[in-house]
Amino acid sequence: MDGLIKAINLLFGENPELRQIIAVTLRMSLISTSISSLVGIPLGALIGSREFKGKHWVQRFTNTLMGVPPVVAGLAVFLMLSRSGPLGSLKLLYSVTAMVIAQVVLITPIMTGLTATIISIPAPRIRETAQGVGISTWRQMGLMIYECRSQLVSTVLVGFGRAIAEVGAVQIVGGNVQYKTRVMTTAIMMQTNMGKFHFAISLGIVLLVISFGINALVNYLESRGNA
Amino acid sequence: MRKYLIVCFTCLMLLGLIACTAKTPPAAEIENPVIRLSTTTSVNDSGLLPYLQPHFEADTGYKLEITSAGTGAAIEKARTGDADCLLVHAKSSEEDFIGEGFGEERLPFMFNYFVIVGPADDPAGIKDAATAAEAFAAIANSGSKFVSRGDDSGTHVKEKNIWKDAGFDPAEEDWYISVGAGMGQTLTVADEELAYTLSDKATFLAHDNSLSLLKEEAEDMKNTYSLIAITPERWEDTNHAGALAFIEWITSGKALDLIDKYGIEEYGEPLFFSMR
Image 1 (tube, each protein chain N blue to C red):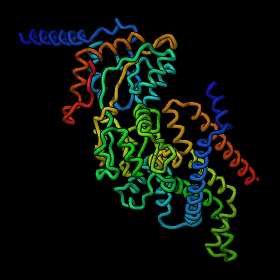
Image 2 (cartoon, chains in turn brown, yellow):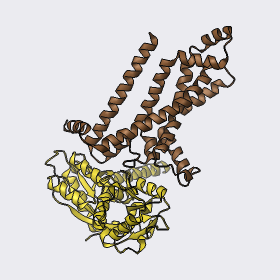
Image 3 (tube, rainbow over the protein chains, first blue to last red):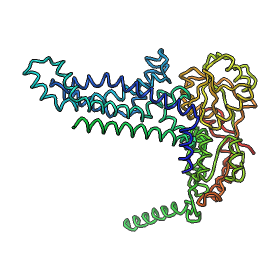
Image 4 (spheres, one colour):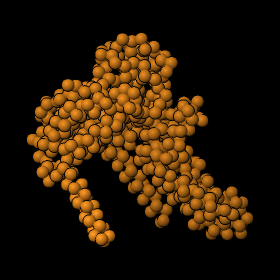
């Protein structure tokens, strides 16, 4: 209880480092979610909107990637960006860019998979109508995305939730460097390991509030989408 | 006749089995056989404790549960009542801990040296420095990168003291990378960033990297490990008797001999030196 009070004081008090950590976290999560959405949603729509040979296998592949453990994705990106790795000359390891790359690798398959599932529900109906009127397949895809917009927004929020809560991959490629790549989750891990529980609790509260906000937004959008 | 022999043989085997089980120390005599030892990563990850543990358990009948973390966190575990005995290496933090009434005394029992490691070409030229403080000053003046543990561990406390002796406060500098992590990850970052760092020798030798050992065995790089038994006054279920038994054993001649021998086989030199 004492820790909780200290944590709340810390949260509303003067602690530039706490705010700096929150800022890095939000920046990283927003950028990685945007990139993943820009790649994942069109890709998912492409898979979900039409029937083609081997679709089954493409979906299985995406589903497998959706379940990749974050530390494995982190390790893969680490080995790529390491000084001894193929992209080592870019000197990106232990930077926010490296963390964004790892998160894009993690989240894009999730966005693709979820979008494909969402789009495939109204797809046959829209396709039938559109073919009757003679609309091109590309415009059909656009129509489907428009039709499912509220569900797709919740997909983006799911991706964002995953990005902000992820710890394994960003610890490996970000290195938890103070003032640079330290984000909320890695800071919580570190502070817990150091026994500084009130700092960890403060960050935990912020994370909880953000994830509550996201959930509320998802629920609101879904209820509006169904109405 | 043959049947008779088989019965005899079986009986002998059974007797042997009973004799074997009887040989293990009677656990019933010890009230609480589990000792929770909270220790620093350097003595656990270097393999020293896993090497001593079976000897201790066979000699005394106690069971050791080891958790390892940076010294700051290791001491915090004792504060929250999650440990019976401490084996750590940061004098000032230990004295604070005893001052707060959690332990009776700190018993220094072994030491080794910190080392400064860095890129093989040594851009800051620290090889010629006489002391760690001089070496740190050379790093700061050349603007070479330095990776700090940044986790309140014994190594981090030592590092901060050396910076103070050198007359620098690098916390806000560009070249100073504070990772808030254990020694292993800190070495990984230093390796990737071609940076210098302060490490305990044992972890450095056990870690796989391309860094070079540039500075060791200066007088201001001594690293002393101490034992503290936690008093049962704060937390009733603290295994004080167990902690005292562990301290008695590890400061015995036999254990100190084992410590002095550890590492010779694998690294050609001992990693820790006993104090007697």
